[in-house]
Amino acid sequence: MMKKGLILIMLLAGNLCFVLHSQDNVLDEIVWVVGDEAILRSEVESQRLVMQSQRMRFENDPYCFIPEQIAIQKLFLNQAKIDSIEVEEGQVIRAVDARVNSLINEFGSREKLEEYWNKKVSQIKEEQKTIYREQMIVEKMKQHIVGEIKLTPSEVRRYFRNISPDSLPTIPTTVEVQIVMLEPKIPLEEIDAIKARLRDFTDQVHNGTREFSMLAILYSEDPESARRGGEMGMMSKGNLVPEFANVAFNLSDPKRVSNIVETEYGFHIIQLVQKLGDRINCRHILLRPRVSDNELLEATARMDTVYAKIQEKEYTFEDAATYISFDKDTRNNKGLMVNKMESVHYGTPKFEMQELPPEIAIVIDGMQVGEISQPFRMKLDPQQKDVIAIVKLKTRTLSHRANLTDDFQALRSIVENQRTDELLREWVAKKQKSTYVQISEGWRNCDFQYPGWVKE
Image (cartoon, rainbow, N blue to C red):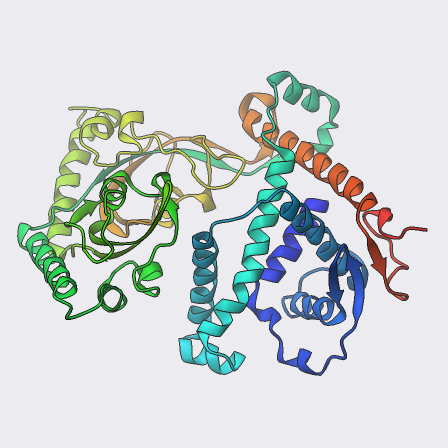
């Protein structure tokens, strides 16, 4: 329960809608003090109005529930200061950019968002950095407290034996899917044209005609970094694809531009901004090759041939996935897809339907186990590449009560979550005892999750 409440208040804090015009007229006061941090009435009221506007359900009295969740977050932040827990500024910037871009899409334009909030987007982003930074620090602090929980199979089996059958979770329908992908051939003329544009950009930077950052804003096809003049923020080698990292980390002169680099995302040129130890901040300009309808038709024709030969048993689907598919993530696994979503199925071949790419989910919805689809077009994310694919439905497990044979991983995740909640609850209760807490009259008479807030 504590984890759910904390996540809820963090989501609310991260929602830009908390900047409500109606708050301008609220008579403010300090209602809680946690350590050396104050919780204001306006802060609580703001959260309440956000929840109300989004029809979120209150756990109990909002004037009890909301300030307690804010207080819990402040306990984690206070400990993070003591333990020197920090997050990379680049992560914060990317999270804020993603949220603001989502809001711009919701409002229809940058101008409409600015008009609604009566602030420039740059001001809105700056205000959100503190909120998102705190969210990330809290999550990092929680991970630090919990550590890496390792459960033995016997602990999972013990949980299964001790729980009432009626209390066992219901596992949604899951599927296992194999895939073969073909990438349309990019004409050499298209690649040459892209390289020529990037060489021209490089020349403009080197001769002082244009700034790299301005060229990135105008022309880069990486929208997230383009808005920041191509800047990617501080990153380690592990955060970057190898081809990009090898070139970026060898740059030493911030005034020079790298040679052209090809990655799975397209073609890049890179400029060094700053290097600190094993981390680097650089700018880049990305251009992606365009695939014409003709190339897509040719790729579809090639996949039609593959499909026909599988049906005629000239070779198996698994052989096609191993020797023909260009998808590096599945070809060494006979085409079997692995779930990379943050869910109980992470790292396994099991997918709930909403966890699949939408094009694949639509195709397999009406398929029988063992059936192979006709070729279809899909877009890879995040590479934003158009590819032609066929899929085979390997298994479908219908919704059912969890059991050890089919759902060991899901049960393991449930036990891990329970253990995490227990550790965090114990930590909060202990931290309460050593933290100065003062709650104003009229805000104490609550059924708190943690009774230790009010000290007699």
